[in-house]
Length: 235
Image (cartoon, rainbow, N blue to C red):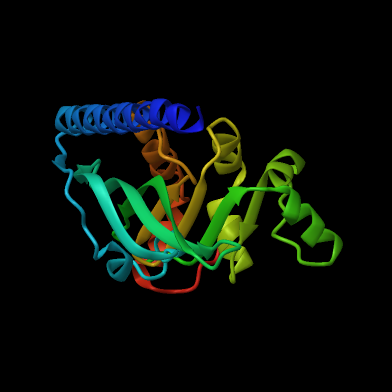
């Protein structure tokens, strides 16, 4: 009886595994087609293959340094209103050991976009504020607060140069971000990356890129001129 049950159930598991694998392959192919079409419509080049040098090309972007076996794929790249854009899906692996000492590999995927900057920027991190951040505030590990209580409540902001953060996140920039979906955004000298800890629906690629574009385009002229000259920013 037991053996007959095993003989009955095992093929069902095999069939279910095949169905799930086939469904996943179909969804991946559909995503590649949709991103390719999106890229073509906007004059960008599309490449579905794995690109493993992104973490070394952009070593300061922390989200690209997690785990191992890192690579970008489904890449849409090219000119975006005068700036170089790379939008992509990203993969990395982490590992754990179960109670029996067996090593397990965990695959992580998320979406991101990088806009390069023609002027050297300064480090700045903007991300949604979470529960652990509020605990950190209690112990004195505070982020940068702004005049907008709503903005300070919703966003965690960190920068070595606080004045730089205030210059970038002026009143209009804060209002702009409050009206957009929340992303994690990191400024480094050569550009800005925007990402989430999940893959975006294809329609959201534009929203994420336009969020970074709006921040860069909204930087005050005095700030841009100071960055071009390489001097200190003085409002």
